[in-house]
Amino acid sequence: MKLLRRKEGPSLDSRLAALLEAAELAEGRLPEEAVSGARAVAERAGVRRTLSIDHTVAALAGATGSGKSSLYNALAGTDLAAVGVVRPTTSAAQAALWDGEGSGPLLDWLDIPQRHPAASASGLSGLVLLDLPDHDSIQVSHRLEVDRLVELVDLLVWVVDPQKYADAALHDRYLRPLAAHRGVMLVVLNQVDRLPDSAVDRCLRDLRRLLDEDGLAGVPVLAVSARTGAGLAELRALLNDRVAERKSWSTRLAADITTAAARLGAPEETPAGQAMDRALTAALCEAAGVPLVVEAVAKGHRHRAVVATGWPVTRWIRKLRPDPLRRLRIGPMAPTGGPMGGPAGELPPGRAPAAPSGQAAGSSGQSASGQVIGAEVVGRTSVPAASAVQRARVETAIRDVGEAAASDLPGPWAAAVRQAARSRSRELADAVDRVVATTSARATRRPRWWRAVNVLQWLVFAAMLAGALWLGGLFGMDYLRLPQPPLPTVGVVPWPTVLLVGGVLAGVLIALLSRLAAWAGGRRRARRTARALRTAVGQVGDDLVLAPVRAELDRYARFTEALTRARA
Image (cartoon, rainbow, N blue to C red; front, side, top):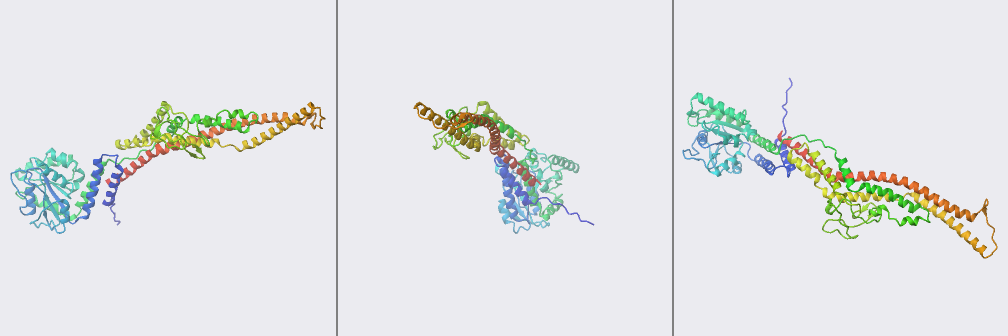
């Protein structure tokens, strides 16, 4: 025969740790009352576990005139509490102790100065019975004392009478909110000696119905008369069972953890992330002037190719035109300004001018003017500022990211995710500008073939110049009527003419071929730059928008996991 081992849930320690973790993760996301309440429960549980677990603290709580003090005296076997017609009678909680040795620190923590040994030897060893003030007392201090001790005691014994057992104040303020504590709760219908037997049964059935509606199904309900002693034996037996188990304190703490976790919220499945990076990247690229930069890369490549490989006789004309990339302050040793706008990374209609090179930015937050040196960017580019429409597209894309990620989250966490999406939006302009400048600067690297063609052009130019000088010398000698030296020829064409005409034709042809190659190379470089810029700008969007959103979603996932462990 196989023995079935009962599967135990998480330990109290692990649930407390999970509750604290959930409270820390919920800081700033959920109402402070719920977070501080969870921490208070964890602190209270930590203290209670260090005190005597051999004693069970049970409290008699009830309304004015319910007979708590009479029942307290009857259970203790002596008149410890004053009983009278003047209300309220009990002004401060007092304790009756059955074998109370070692309970001092526990009662000190409960702040119960009045302590009495019980005269009744009814097998309740380890019971600490408290008589509480009336929960509906006209004295505010009495109600506050009841509220304080109701949160601390191990076992709650609610004493009601036939006239006020349905009191809304009792059910709404105490019983219903304590539904999770039904495992450490008893309800005693006192003063049944005033009713006929049939009325007692009706009262018990009606009280049972009310408790079930409060979520307290299964809570024991006893009919007792402190005056005649009816039902006291059953009450003592039930108390003795609870005390003998030595588990009421841990059951109470477990219920406290469950309640505190419920106030933090119900654990829900973490929503699946939705990819919004493409729309965000597209909006950032447009606002950062990436299409303009890509076009400038192609034109700049052709411009520099003509300067580097063009015919030396005419290439200087090209140098008079500005380099498209340098006009945007992109490229080696190019001072910079900025595309997306104004101070502190905002997206204003205009762009503030950059400060002089090497000078720190002013209080407005505008970056200092600077240069692109290698892969390092100092300052901002001069890409035109984003238009109002482009800025609106960026803001809309950021909002869409937050809305998509927060769509299935509870209200406070959804607001935190939306805020996370916007939390670093002010840094976007500067960050995007830096990656645009850095990535575009790589497009200014000179291909190796430019140098070879440049050398070839100068060789051809030297040949053309040699031919021109040679022919000039011959014309001079002819003008001075000097004898002509022997003139080598290529076929019938003299070599000086071959060098001059051939140099001109070769130089122009090489320049035309180089320009065709530069046009094709510019298109390739523009495509590569566009891909690199989209990747780099997308990484900025990921770092400054998507990463905070993912971090908040991860925080929520850890919160729900901790909450699930705490509620287990």
